[in-house]
Length: 196
Image 1 (cartoon, one colour):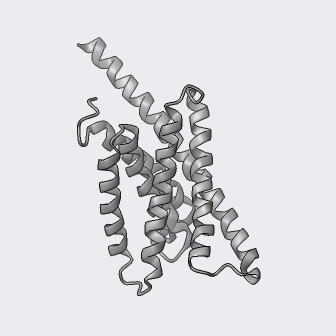
Image 2 (image 1 turned 30 degrees about the vertical axis):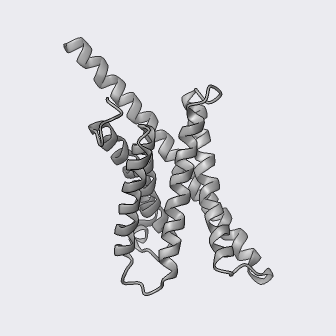
Image 3 (image 1 turned 45 degrees about the horizontal axis):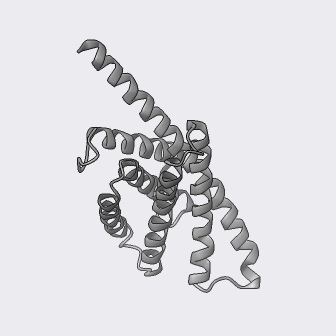
């Protein structure tokens, strides 16, 4: 695959596989709640698509195209929640998309280093990075919204821990999706060589 391709079949397959894993997992446990923007399981839908877009583009070192596509995804996600008349949701989605995409970008920076070459190390690394990013989003938004007071610290810790667990799970599914994508592409290429 040529890295200069704006969008390739492999990028589409990688993105669809990752989003399918994350959204499918969320749907299997929480049903239609993942499509309700005011419910916490909606992270499986919204962050699942963010992870898929980030992963597809950043994997192929297409950072600008990835950023542009994420901006389009932000506008689409805001359109999906526009019936909720709360401006805070616009801030929430931009921060969430930026932080989740940033964790995937950081993962690919680290994955290209010599100390993170084994696939299972990469799965663990992306799980930790997405988990931390997802949990730090709660803290950042709490501070930004000035909701963090001593009376709300218990709620903040509880939300942070919940988002950490969801983020680690989504990162794990991202890593498994990458592993499955790479195995599938290797299999296809080897059969093309044999057939050709």
